[in-house]
Length: 411
Image (tube, rainbow, N blue to C red):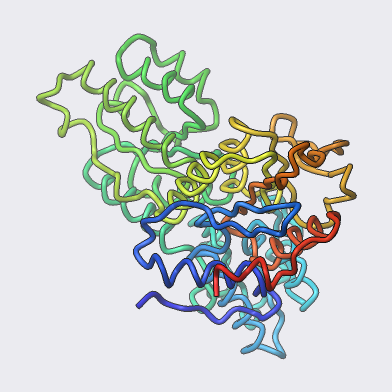
């Protein structure tokens, strides 16, 4: 029986949650990736089979509100955002939680303000060993409300395990993302570490592994992305690949395959296991499920895609990337970004800037068929935000069916 979490009622939804529950009952093994469809007549929503709060996020949110409930007379701090969703973080701020740093690691409040009596919550991304040591030196304990995702911790443990076997850890991630900073710190306690951002950077690393480029080339290309004392001549002879759990799982696998082949080219197939560690078991199942469901959703087609999530959410941005390959896509953080039927405010991934676009929602089809909107969300997005987006859009269409009618196929 899967674990269930006690989440605040204001993150639950009367529409999306009904669809999710119905799909769970009819497809407990999660084998059917076909999207759910909510038909409102003039507009129809195709909703991904998997999206929204994952296990790690639900765990983090539950623990954060548990900390508030159990410590009404104490000061409560978060090391940084609990998850990458502004609605959730703002609600915690409203309830008195103070944030010690932002998502980039910039200090908002110095550790000097803390006392041993304060409660400090570790976010879902985890934290570095250096931060843990600094807080422990001040008598602050992190064990009571540590919300680090179990799948992130799994990556740490595997990294340290292969490090003790004299392998170098290659992290597929964004070097200064909170999770990658934490993984880098935990891994380097046992192993040399280098971070690659994408397949192109992995190919650059592969050149060094194959002996096609020297140490000077490596240090130029990977400045600030390797652990102290790292030297490619000695530390790229044995390696294993792990990832920031919010990256594209298919890209992580492609990077591992590329580096594996580079090892074979350099040392031969017969010596592969001596030089390359199998780390497939570190991929996050929830991230892969959401990405696979998004691909199935896109295959069903639509007029436009709307992806909901925090603008600093890595896993959400990868869902946007997948959708953008096939249809017009808008990355919004909540329903407030839907300015009107003709105007939308959204994040453009290429520029990392929020932009306003006119005529984003297609006009009615000449044959009278419904406008199809592909809808999904990142793993840190509460279901209620999709409800708000869906109902706002439905309100712009004449004579739509009621929510109750649209939900009839789902009981």
